[in-house]
Amino acid sequence: MFSGQNRCRICGAVISDDNPDGIGSQCRAVWKKATTATAHHFRGLDLWKAKTKFWADLFIEEYRNTKFRSQFRKGFFTTIATMQKSGEYRITKKMLEIIKNMLVGMGGKIQYERVKEVDEAAKAIARGFYENFIQTMTDEEKDYRINMAKKFYGEASHNKSLNKGVKIWK
Image (cartoon, rainbow, N blue to C red):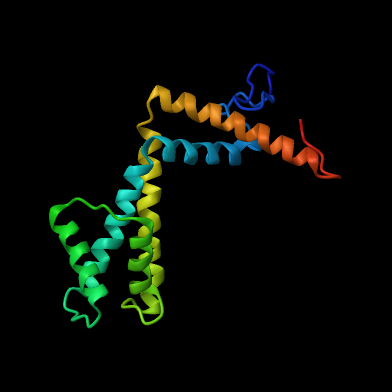
């Protein structure tokens, strides 16, 4: 089972011969964190656009036939609708926060029962993004991910050693 020849690409621990990706079980969490960090570093804007497009389209769909009394809400809806027509979504964090509050917040258009469904759809967009990212990684992105994993592993080892009574497995 263990010939001693295969080592974890992050920490260097001995791993089994049938390990498919060269990452030890102790380093899985670090590997996932490094993958997320790499995806955000190289293609984070694409994820942001996909998330904001989802929420903006839902916002337009829910408020399409609403007559707003507030000038702010009228103008805000018009801005988002214009972005949707042009296909160019330039939504800031604050705008996304307003959209979510108008949809899901107190007195929002989306009923409580549907909030979980909408939240799951938004999470599915992110999962699809990460799965696509992993399948289409370039060599540069792969190198960056392994370097980030080693960095995160080093930080985790250092932080654990600062805590009294915590042993680091090596």
